[in-house]
Image (cartoon, rainbow, N blue to C red; front, side, top):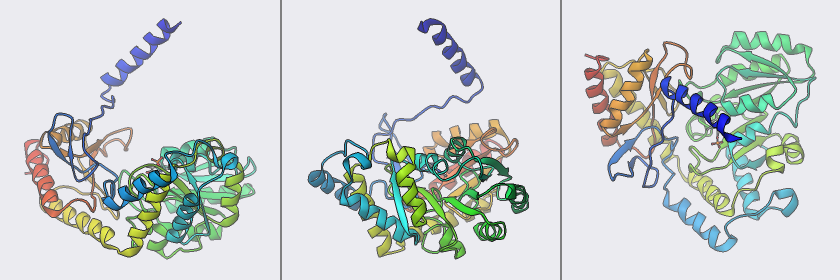
Length: 396
Ligand SMILES: *Cc1c(COP(=O)(O)O)cnc(C)c1O
């Protein structure tokens, strides 16, 4: 049975390798952090984690998780409508609603599930989903699971969005959905304009805050805070796997009735296990930490500014950013791939992005700054960029 299929897979895998698209994984033998230890004992500086607030190894989160394990056990062994929830789930949902100034919150195992389960329960083939071309894969998959009519507008292009909204007047309800921060360029969605258009053309608004939460806005509370849009965004989705501690977990937060309907009908919520108590307790502690001071957010922002200034002074072409993501433009796929490999040899981990992940000719290195980095570590990264950049003829 397996023989012919096995050969089919082997051939396909060989093609992936030959195209240079095979994804390798390095093995880390330390907590996630600014500096990590690899399986061979060597150390490297990590500039490719979504650990924006540096909380992946935070002692308070670890202590909260351990305490919850001692007091509340390891797992829930069921979904909520069958076995119920713990008070910790309720408290975390409340903490998320408070953070985003929303009415209610529903937890998922991941943001991938939040996005996968948000459209189908709310919209039918009579309705329209209007989606940014660069939205995350999980939004694309969520849209696919829903029978609504689909419209796609060019990234952050408000004229194109308006065209879609005009066409979508043919449908009963419309929803605009966008990432808050786009992960390739680090640009922030123009949420003020999106909300204005939504009002003009009678549409709901959904924003995925995965890369914007904890980063964007004067205190990091995301795009609504940044643009002063409290009460005008209907749905936010987000992850506990990036700024918010870096473990796992996702959520949808927003209007009361929307969340209530998701609890009744959202399939990844109904048919997938609830978050373990330790993750809820760590999440509650996390929002306590973020409520106490703005220090982590401010340090993260200062690190982005410091890195950008040093890189521009060195002659690199930096894509304008308003987030924790800095794209170092190289405009050539082979150069970008080599650059990341050479940086790894200098013990600096950054990611190369090439076509088809980014448009043809827009190949780059993506750097992600964290509150966990200090200036001396950023200096080491910039020094490596300069060394490799000269060796590869990117800067003089
Ligand atoms: C990372 C990410 C997700 C997935 O989050 P998980 O909780 O890891 O599933 C969803 N949307 C966006 C925009 C992301 O960046």
